[in-house]
Every structure is written in structure tokens, then in C-alpha cells.
Image (cartoon, rainbow, N blue to C red; front, side, top):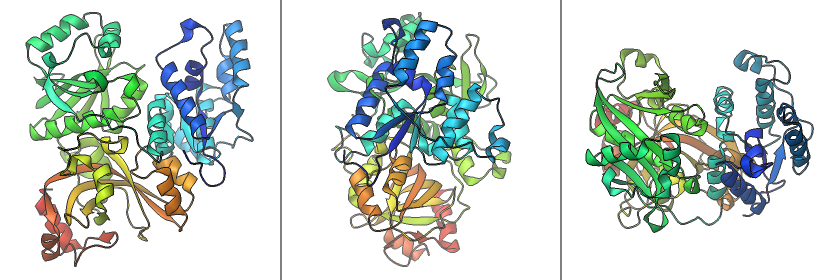
Length: 494
């Protein structure tokens, strides 16, 4: 990977990544050890800088096993120590509180402060609490799990890895029960084999993504329910939801959720829910990011995460972006100013593979195409796109039509390639070389958005012009006038 202009990107790892990366005995090797080691190699290959924070020594000193503690203190010396760590901003006290010095929360805040002050570009942690705190202080795009960090580094490469196969909607009896994919599930749930046999006998449906040799890379097994857990309306349960460790970093979890939400919308489901253990922090973070909320526990101690697909009256009091997160996709509100964004066919094909007419010929997608949360970079001058704004992606040159609707999350304007790469690497169609080329000519606009709707019938340029949305082919990002916005609202059924 080509190095960034100036200093290389700096990446900070948390203690919960360092410990599996440096097991002190064979018994200390854990599931995260292999992906953490893969991440370390990727960082070294990219010639980025990996740091630990001085505050992490507090975590190590808490270990009551003296021998292990001393060994880990020695191992810390292998890594660059972040110099002159920045202080936690006073404004965070009202947002995050003022924890006791050397407490777990205090360490968390020190790590986040390093990101906020740009001492590092990205923080890698498996701690769900830190991810939640990062969201509260506006740093969530720069805090990543090991899986997300791997995807980020892959996304910034000049050449892309082989794309994964497409999602298949099939039956439980169509999967190989002897696939190693199921080994960890058997460990978590001893009656797994008898339960899976029941699913096969009942012809339960599932989405699968297959890897090399037809082995499972990801799976979501579902069950239709009615009147469970006090829900009023048709309910879809995600009985099993897993991405194989070897395929993490490809955002296959979002690819599965994309299928789940489309299925639930078409079939009139009012709720979707899933259960997970608290230790599955990374998995829970994915679900919470898409509007699932903890609503209780099962008898076995699992958390019940629920997403309500149908808006209620009180939903109208929620901001447009939060409305979409809670109830979509595809649900969205068309109230904020809307924007037409022209996108070239080559980028459209990569960013929106499920909207591409060539999809049946080239199934699958790159990591940024798999996800629902994406970033588009351009040199547009507009600075008016706010959270919740509807974004209409216009396929230029070829189809000349709006093909995809998105919902804006946030924007970033910068001429610093390192800053752009740190915030968009997980989600953009652009390689590192593309980002550097864009930034070499001045400020770049990074538009973070959520994919909401793939239009089965794209809105052609002629219709857009006749109904006051456009005056002609858009050359840059264009604001939709009020009259055109009302027509679009009716056209989209919103």
C-alpha cells in the first residue's frame, strides 16, 4: 500500500486487542488472536504506525497474576508509546461524566481523547462501551473493531481482493451440518445439532454467503413468529446470525442485514429481533448501529435486541436520521432538503452492486458494496448537506436516472488525505491513491450516508426534468427544489 503524504497513518490499539495479540501461554490464545495478528501484519504491510497509550499500563497493572503481569509489561515495550498524550476535553464531562482517575472509564476517555486531538487516526477496540461513547462525542467513524479495521485497510488498497459470492436465500437443509462454521455454535449451545435438525425438518429459511470450497462464510437463519414477547404484529426472529472469523472485515454482517430488512419490508413484518450474549460486543454493536435496542433478557441470560420497523406517532418527533436508523431501511422521512448526486458508472458499479444491471453476471461485491453505511467522495462545493437529508444518486453517462436513495449521516471537508482516509476507509469506493489524488487538488467533500432504497424502477432524467426536480443533466451535486421534492415524495410513496 502506498504511504500517505507526510507521516503515515497512526493507529491506536486498546488493551482488549493487545492481550489476544500477545498471549502469555497457549491457554491464553483466543478467538481474536488470529484476526488481531492479521491486522498487525496489515498495518506493517501498509507501513502505518501502531501505538499503545500510556494509560493502558493501568489495565495491565490490574492483573493479579504477578508472573503474567510482568511478562505483559515487558511485551508492552515492543510497541510505540503514544508521546505527550492529549488531555480529555473539559466539554466531555457533561457528555461522558468525570470518572475516577485510573478507573476503566478514565482509561477509555484517554484513548478517545487521543483520537479527538488527531494524535492518532483510528482507535481499534472490541469494547462496546467505548464504541457507544465514541458515538456520543462524534468519533464513531474513527473507532473500529478488529474486523472493521481489517476492512478499512483492505478498502484503502490500490487493488481489491477477490469479491465474495452473492447472498443466497435458501433452506436450512441446504447447508452442510459438518461445516466447521458451526463448531463455535455447538460450543455455545450444546443442543445445537438437535435444534438445527428441527430447523431442517421445518424447512426454515436462511440467507447464506459461501466462501471457497462452498464452505459457509456467513449465515442468518430466520423464523416467522406472531405474538411473542408482547409484540403486536408479525415478527421476524434472527435465530442464528454469524460471520466466520476467516471472512470478517468484508462487512458480510451488513450484507446479511440488507437482505433481512428487504425481506421484512416486503412481507409486512412489524418487528425484527435477535438474542446475543453481552460478551458478543462487536456483534451487538452492529445491531445497535441499525436501530436494534435491548428490550430484556432470555431465561438463559441472553440480551434481546429488537428493531421496530413500523413507525408510531411519537416517531414523528424524532429527527430524520434517527427515524431512518430506528425504522429503516427502507423507511425514511423526506422533510429535509434533498440533493441529487451524480455518480459515474464505474463507481456506481462498486458502491451499489445490488443496483447494477450487471449484478447477475458478476455476483458479489467489495466490502464497501456489501455494507449499508457508505461514503462518497467528491470535489463538490456544496456545504449544505445535513444529517437526515435525502440523497438521490444519479447514474450519469449511461442510464441517466436516479437509481439509489440514501440518507445523509454527516459530511467532512478536508484536503488532508490522512484525515479523509482515517474516517472513510471502512466505507468508501475510493482507494488510497484515489483519495490522495483528490486531496492534491484541494478540499474534498466526504459524504457519509446510509443506503435506504434501491429503486426497482429508476427515475429517468426526463421525468426528473418534467416534474421540477432538475433542469437538465446534473454536473455536480444539486439541491432539489421544494416542488420537485413534493413530487419525489409522492413518487417514492413516502
